[in-house]
Image (spheres, rainbow, N blue to C red):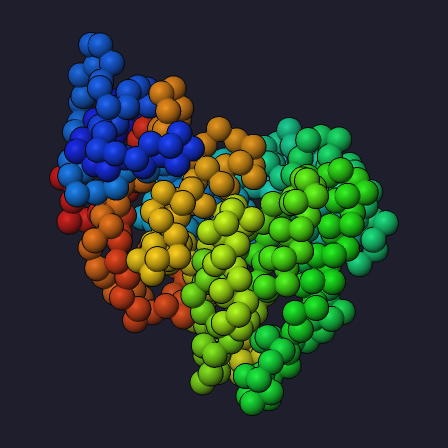
Length: 433
């Protein structure tokens, strides 16, 4: 099906948080854009009708951090495999961190990633450019060229910039090009060789630990630089209650700062590391139930504006060593929506707020016109069944990575259709024509 196909999605519950829409409304698509909400425009004749009775229709999901492993680590996954997984998860837009090989510090690499994603046509991939050359934290990158090449933000990925003056100059330079800077607040000296949260579980298991201060010390420095430079900062992957309080205070002082949280941090805690489950080796580490509760409260209150996957697929060998020697991260694209819906089922969020954290929230961070379904907008659409139950198993994953601590979990809610720019890029197998 190409983008010239006219599609009507009928009978579904349309939820568009950006426009305050929540009701049983049809959605009509023509030439890759929303042509009508509710009533079809005069003369509109659908070439295809998708029956959405009993289903939720919402904007395509936007994920602010997903490592697709290409270029440089195709033995773990590829852009082809992971964008197919994104489509199956209702995700239409992905942000790719700059720590590929080669690093996204030249226009050529940024363009290669986008061209590869466009070739496979399953999801929109937006690269984030390296804040410093080679992510080394020593020289500022060519941000103007990276922006022209399609980079939507600047980031040093998980590499800590130790020289505070370089950090200041980089933030100022990014601001001159109206680029948001993504920062992972973690002091590498305080992290040291740690692999789990510094607490009772780490002590009991004898594992090297990461204190909360590794995050809050770096966050304090970055907030001070945000105030000094006026740069627009987005903090990636907060994990601690203290960080939430610091963020809220900065927002009350009207600093241009936002933040996201990884979906798994809203459900798991340090207790899940028991048994040395290497699928729970994460960065930042899983912390305490108190931290988890504070993160949930910040998501509900809007201090944390986005929930992301922090997708990091690995080959099996990467998780089959002694715990500290395993690689951190989980395959997370296909649990992003189910984990967020679980917050609704548990009463932490209402459905509209949950979907806002996956659509209009991340779109606002990027400053891009996605994550909404008003007439004339690009027709990125996710249609999901909120009631269907299913079990996450390796054979149910489209991603090449099966490294998930949620294997064996039963989820409620699964994607039925995904449309990217008005083109049907995923249809659940039992619904395919």
